[in-house]
Amino acid sequence: MTDKKRIDDETGTETTGHNWDGIEELNTPLPRWWLWTFYATIVWGIIYTILYPAWPLVSGTTRGILDWTTRGEVAAQIEAVNLSNAEMTQSLIEVDLGVLERNEALHRFAVSAGAAVFRTNCSQCHGAGAAGVQAAGYPNLLDDAWLWGGQITDIADTVRHGIRSEDDPATRWSAMPAFGEMLSEEEIAALTTHVRSLSGLEEADPQGATLFADQCASCHGDEGTGDRTLGAPDLTDAIWLYGGTTEDVTYTIENARFGVMPPWGERLGEAQVRAVAAYVHGLGGGEAQVGTTD
Image (cartoon, rainbow, N blue to C red; front, side):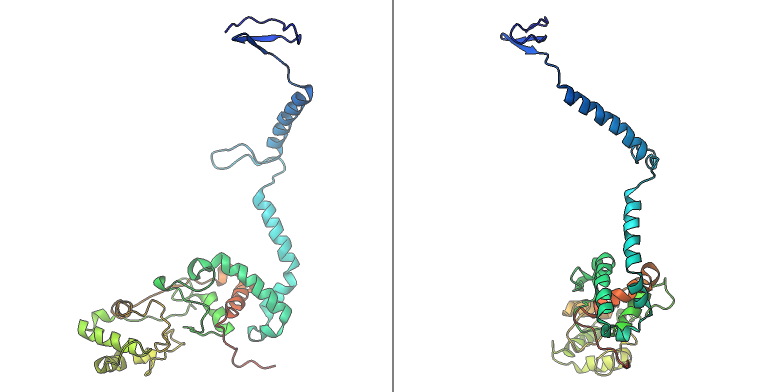
């Protein structure tokens, strides 16, 4: 390899001086169009950093003289959509939820909007398909078992105020005592057998029936059919919020359960609360509204 530059005889182009086994490297200049394009990109890059956010700083970036951001663009798009839906949104806020289904266009709008609200805020607990997560005590919203009522107004109230939430004074509230502190292991075993027998999973236990009447019937009813005003579940339908195995029921009786749902009223606003209530109500387990008239 040599480093002596010269003019190549055949091309008339200066060499770089590099020579490998008799093969010389030509110092061929770049095409002018390529060079001008390259210079143009440099100029454009400088202009871009002046106009748009570009240089990183300690707690952000330079904003650019146009003050443009992707967040601002998205916010503007959302605002445009909100303005186009303003009339329907106001109608949804004002309508009597009990007769919402009679307004086909408004109901369709509410369900569509509610689906988006559900996917964004509710699916993390209740699942993308709203089937719930039994191991964690997140209710299945597809069946017809409702702890606090399955009419659309009931669902809206649950969404609006939450369950056992300390953040909303109007929250739905109930508390089951932990019977492990009150009953013996033998009594808890008998009570577990009786509770499971209510849905046909075991044979009835006389001792458990007596304990149930003394300790549980005030909330769950004499027949174990529950009380929605208290959020006490129906124990006869074989639908279990935390599981219906002997181990699951025993744990529930011994330690109690205290599931909490946050209130969404302030975070979502009334229109979105009503929209997601309409969506959940239409999933398959929603109940007809009682007391509404034409």
